Image (cartoon, rainbow, N blue to C red; front, side):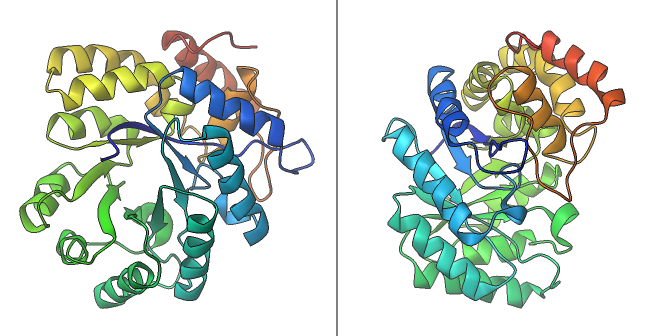
Length: 294
């Protein structure tokens, strides 16, 4: 079972937008050294929306190759096309991903029945552990707790990343889902409390910048050590806030570049962080002890 701080890894790029393979390899090593518990490759933070299919699979392959079994790699393989999601999931399995993370079909605005059938179709087509990903603020659709619970009974669907920030959903899903269904927070700001209430971890943007603290916070929260978890989380609160000062992953890519871990590359329609936002983010990084900030 994958537990703890799961970094939603940025996809490093050259300034012209090309993939930066050396920085990707360096980032994987950084997260192993800093004790991240798992990596999500090519999720929202990894700019999945602007990578073509071959790049998408290549980033997953390179991440798996560099990790070399030292920590699990979860591949982002969701799509608003069920056929495309199946193909990406098949290819992720072929290059060695340990599990897949599938965002709800965006833009289409499917019904709850459509969401159920979509995820069931992917699970039945590809024999790999699959984690649902509910983020209605981005997708325009909401995977309701009763639908998540229904999907928990489908073989291969092992958990959900719940990114609404609504803590009551943890209890709602747990009360209805199959025993052992994994519950991950997709909201850094409420992730500590989510784990204290019984969640298995946080799929985190903040972990890109302060991975060791996120690991320690998650370990304390999952272990029920509230005072310790909240003390650590207080140091991270500025990052939880300011890494979303502009649309994710704009701020986190700036932060990773400022730490000297990657170059200043991002793809349109995303743009580089506005200079007016830099001081607040820099201060949040320093408060969290996020290495040397350039």
